[in-house]
Length: 140
Image (cartoon, rainbow, N blue to C red):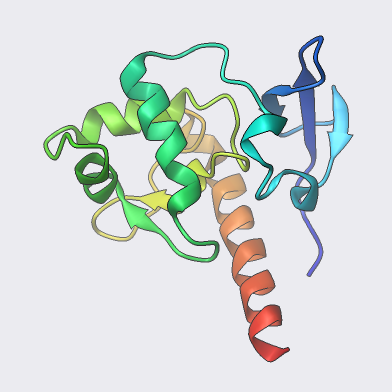
């Protein structure tokens, strides 16, 4: 399945990825370059303790699946903090590496992406891409 979105990254002086962008303005990369990147391949340079806790929980969501904001709040030990989870996800500097696109509203709709309602199409494209990859692997 073809990747229908552009990805680029910014690295720190040690070569670790510190930010991911959905454009071609930095070092170009592919989804495959980022997904499952080992923890030593990126560095979180900002965020509160709670935000980082949310971000580091994201890779535990299996590829091709989603959970709700409420479920994420429960997973990080703050079951009533769905809104705070949403705010943390909106500030995620490493989308795809820390797959915030896998978190949706309780009613199954996508919610925002990267803190922008108009970026939901990117969220859908990534989910569709992952679903296609998961379907492809199930055929092998």
